[in-house]
Amino acid sequence: MEHETHEHVRNPRTIAVVQGWLYADALRPIAELDGNGTVVSQFVYGSRANVPDFLIRDGRATVSAPMRAAA
Image (cartoon, rainbow, N blue to C red; front, side):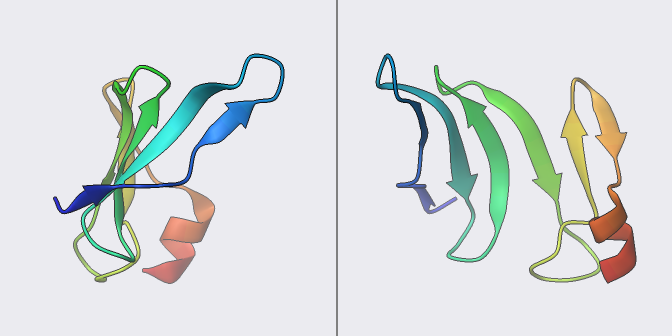
């Protein structure tokens, strides 16, 4: 893991960070973070370098349509 993202989704009323991303490198997000920095989902790579095969959220692995199409 090299760095956390500099992009944050902000709520315009409270100016609080509500979401963030952790990147393995410039092209591969590996985790989605909530406003407290807690991991809420993880991206898992395998068959392609820059396209996740699936993500883990709430303890379950999920494959989305774009991820299936890219594989």
